[in-house]
Length: 81
Image (cartoon, rainbow, N blue to C red; front, side, top):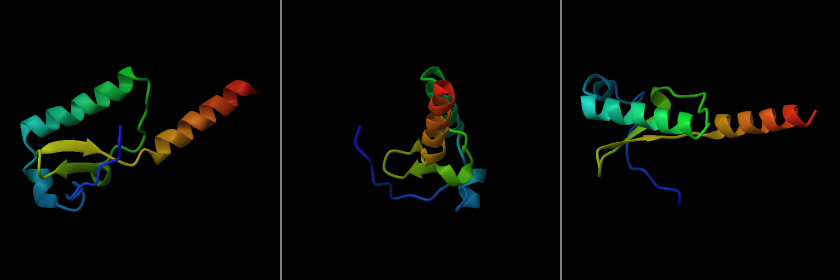
């Protein structure tokens, strides 16, 4: 998949957005985390600053997978020892 440029605010940047988060958007976030779990991917940094709302589609986007990539490398290195 290609990288997307998001024109949005994180949930952390907009308290009003957190308070008005719809049930559908909450479900989307749960679905994202569930999908990652089924793919054996641990994000490890799921928090409001890493959850974005795409204004065009009104969909939740989970960002900042650097921590997850670092974790995969640590696990692979440990397995080689």
